[in-house]
Image (cartoon, rainbow, N blue to C red; front, side):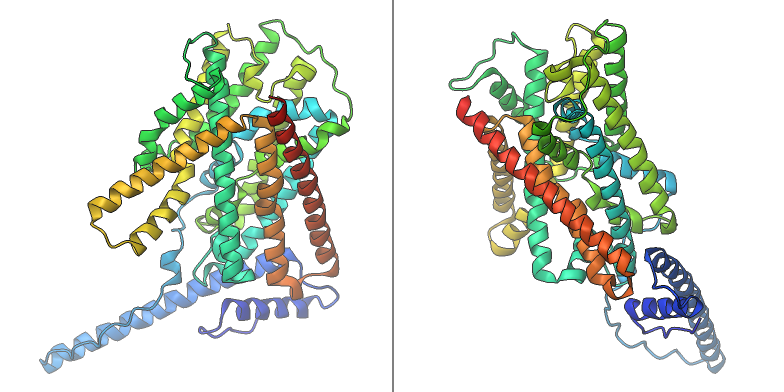
Length: 491
């Protein structure tokens, strides 16, 4: 393979590598696997070049020092240093192993959506399980394409989702996508509040707590918001980093508790599951589109690995575990409760069992732990704007930012009280935003960056995936909005 000059860009190097691969096999166009192979070879070559440059630099320094000592004259002062952007310094340090990357991916896939898996299958029948498998496969493939884009863009100074978005579609589109990120976060936090209110009300059905104009569930949402308020004020959230492992453990314990409820409590598996219920298909698609979200963080996980070439295996393994447990829980729950399955499986389990109470408390604790972490991108962006535009004292700005954080939490809690319909809120977020962030945009980025290097078959497949995802998202969004309106007007 011909040597690529050190000053060449990543795109030039990649093109040269693909051109060489084309010489070896001129009968076909380069595929995504060829791009990955060339990227690996390019990284190895860059490491060798850096090592050779370091050796040459060290040798020249030694020679200069020796000559200065022989001449007994001080070495001339070095010229003033010029600050140049170091792309590698801006990237995450490559320290994570394959096992750590798999756990990180799995923790992003396990979340609030697993609670609604039995409801999705109960509403859509076996078609719900088929939808879950299809959406998981599409998201995993999109995450794979996004990892290729992240590795391609890493040496340019950004391996994150937003950096790839800017490289592919420009600064303005990046701003639009960032805004969509924030809206999705707000929707997810609304789901957190509703889930905490529902499960607390199920734990304490006769608590006696009441506030004027608020139902028992809304009172519990208010209580949960008050409990979370101090964590929203905290700026350093490193102490909450344990929530990643907590999500994995609580999800697996939830599956175990449901199985115990079916066998020990004598509920059994008595409700048949039909092949399809058409009315429930759009909502089920939205629920699973939300459940398998979180892949927008995968590019950062990829570039932080010691060996990014193993990232594809980490994605496949994490999606396999998450999909198996999520679909398994959905089938078991639907067989247990049938059409009476609640929007959250915890609300269908017998409350008098100790395992149910443990799972309910874990379900309440998980959103409480994660709320401040999920909200931090929004509060950080607001505070950055505040500190840049306001020239007041630091103490005053700190107080204003604290009030601003409290106002954001209050707005989320109020919206949760107005629309306390978990299944439709989660389905709306999944259909309208998560499917765009985790499927449509990554496929679009990949096409934009590598269109000229893809086979016609690959182009057709990715475009078809985008169209299919857009149709599923549009149908789920319409049905979810209709459900929210119907629930609100009938309550």
